[in-house]
Length: 201
Length: 266
Image 1: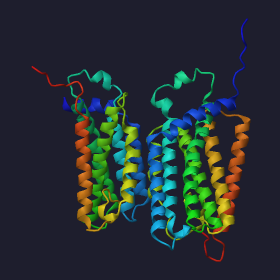
Image 2: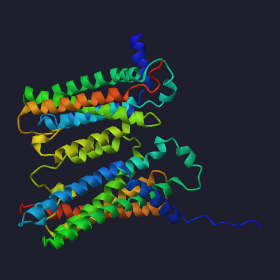
Image 3: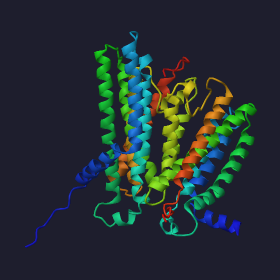
Image 4: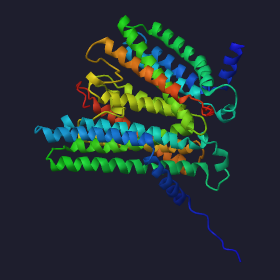
């Protein structure tokens, strides 16, 4: 029953962006295999996070709004389909590429988690605001603008660091983890069901 | 008695669509984010000029260049988003019943790129005026680099429209934007770097050839965008001319940028 639910959800999701993202990720690692791990794995994280954002595009949202399954539940089902696949692919590519050390691997993992969290947060808000229930198109440009703005901030205060910052690895983990948490929180808030209202009695 | 109305000329339709789309393009949130980057880059230069005395355009105005390059990249994403509207809104079939053909509408989108270009020229002219008032010396080759920056905005915009025509998915252009941002040619100058977008030539002659190369590429992307929906003899001629121009200027850049003495003028 549960597997069927995931299968039907996967069938309703747009496939091209996640597949294109996965292809770009594999090509990025293949092209730079054996060199410095940071750039290809950053590209992988960006591509996969961007692809995941499109998974929440739901053109049938108007019809499904009246169903007993809440918006949050419908979106979590979509996340359950696409996020594990993205994480598995990312881990495989990380192992294939290899890193200079455990710290770098954790930093890249934190970055991937941060971008993924931001991606679902942006997609959640954009889909909610869109009358057609699509928000994936807003994810990649928003991530781009956010990261470029971040690089303009002095390294000491940079919220989304792509390179080294003062303080070593720990601030990198903390900042990307914070970005991930904020993203997930925004996603949850944006997934409140419009149809559900408190009944005053 | 019925009045006979002559159909409007294709060029006037392109201009009309260009006006409407251009206004929408410069109000697009992604383009406005690009303008913010350009303003931040310019503000950094203004701050440096007001707080220090040893200012040179070459050393201190790189933030202006980076800001305008980001404006170009985000113009590409915004133009791509505008060009994909028909697909997004499922109005493609509806619009195909209008007397205006798809190539004309693509032409209108390309004409709309004049608006972001005018915005960029205005911003750049303001910062240049400030630099002149502050007596910051700008060399001849640096002036050509500024023109290249303006041309790059049109080029990237045309690339955004071409991508929407041939790869009609909103995922593509932002990923290309990321690639432009993250993938830079190596530190050691090489011959092929002269064909990249962000290279700065050291001589005025080479910088002018690079400007011509960028202009040719912009025209080529425009032709490629229109060619998806309409193929005609004038378009073929324009495409061949643009391709020839790009190949000629590219060959000159490749041979002239790194002469045999081993030093690259990049």
